[in-house]
Structure formats: structure tokens, C-alpha cells
Image (cartoon, rainbow, N blue to C red; front, top):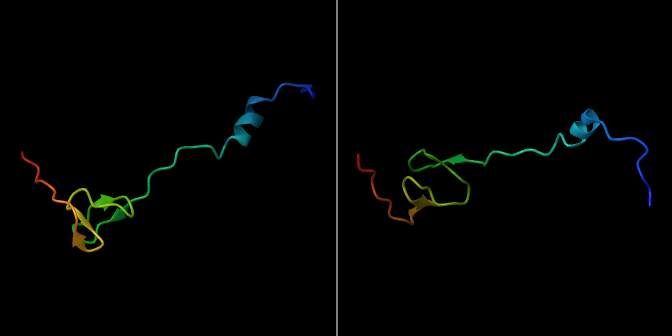
Length: 62
């Protein structure tokens, strides 16, 4: 079994792992109410999907 001769440096390790990161979730604007929501999901603010009402959403009480 091969054994590394020298230890991998911090810079070399971080350059190699530069592409490993958290990615923000994609959002689109709702054509009905304009709120941001995930693509291919029901809009959480108005309950519409693909131009029709799918879910009844209760209004926020202040």
C-alpha cells in the first residue's frame, strides 16, 4: 500500500475543495401574487400552481 511521503498542505487541500459549498435554493416569482417560491411547487402565499388554485391559504392575523 502506498504511503504519502509528505503531508498535504493546507493551501493545496483548500484549493482542491474549493467547489464544495452550500448552494442557495432556486426561487421564481409567482405569476399570480408575485411572491418568491420554489419552482414546481405550490405558492405558499396564495396557494396557486400552474394558473389554478390548489390549496386554500389562510390569511395572516395581526
